[in-house]
Image (cartoon, rainbow, N blue to C red; front, side, top):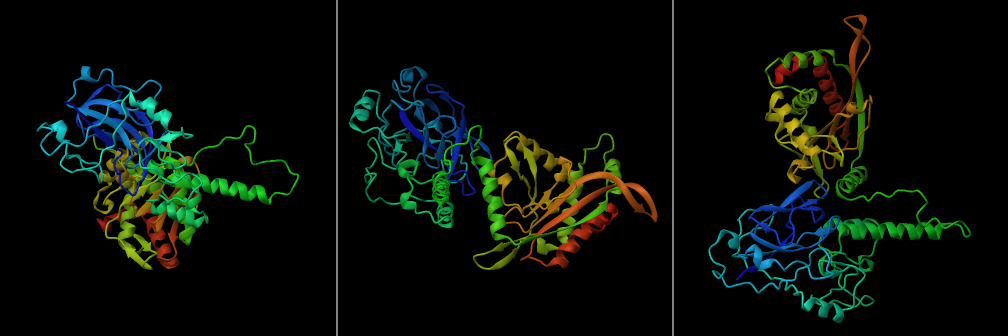
Length: 480
């Protein structure tokens, strides 16, 4: 007899509490293998294909494309041990959405009752924070059959909208444990410290927020929507009487949700500006010899070396001289934390927005190795295939905004990092070289730093060393 297994959205790491379904990779009734990707989701960090640890026939999918799913919410149910023809009629019940299950999940069998098959026991592989072994006991949801579903719907008042069996106003539906009525007192369901912090910063009472997550869980999007609604009410109340009502949409306006990568970037930028007292200094440098060095290195038959890789190597050499800048600030302990390894981030513009892939242990890589890793990460970023680990925990950022044709910038620090080097476009300009006016390839370098970590002397020394290496690449030989 087939055993119905429920696969929930696993913890994808880096404190992520939810993901948005981009597309389903399987259909209800389709046979899947162990560790076969079943859905592609977008987190605040990256696009991720989520593999299912069970092999069998897909009996249900939960959520349509564009649905935000909290960690721990069901994604699919799989009939383990069922033949394809056994589940031919087990798709969604008539009128149900997104392939709601029509197969009742039996209670967990006793240890050893499933047999010794690999699919029944799970793959043993993990993403982050979840295992696929069948040995651990856990509570299963009982999914209504097709015959039971209409009766349950008629016996339960229909909520405005549901997500994974939970009403959007926080009241449980179906046979889930009951909660207080909408007008009565209720327990605030929040598990994310980020959600609590956002609410606290905006003086928002979480008791007034209805969670859209499983069992009424309050998600970040719920709090952000409540904050926007609160701001609109306060703004409307402050407007003079008799003015036109501007609370509604303006004809022709376009609204873009701050979700996914865009939302994560907005939150990081805002936090950086709130917490870090940054300052910026800049200098012009003659990059003519640097370009000549790159041309000399790119001989036929040898791996290509990018200009960004050369600049990355200059940064690691400069950080070896000024380790104070490879640091972060622990605001809780009120301590500056100097970090032993340089995890070098570089800004990359993609169709999905700005991302910052991270080259691990950049201080130990050659220019050739840096070039290869930067190229790999850039390709993965443009394809939306970077993992959360490849987009986090950087210690220093290199920002080449010169690719946009601009000379200078004062970028926002990539929180919680303490420094960022900005590189403008390289353009032919008049320059005094060897005592004579000449046309040289000139670049403007900017350096933004956390003033809590260092003073202007350290920052100026770092930037001057970088500029000297740009003008005389042979100086790098001293650090090899």
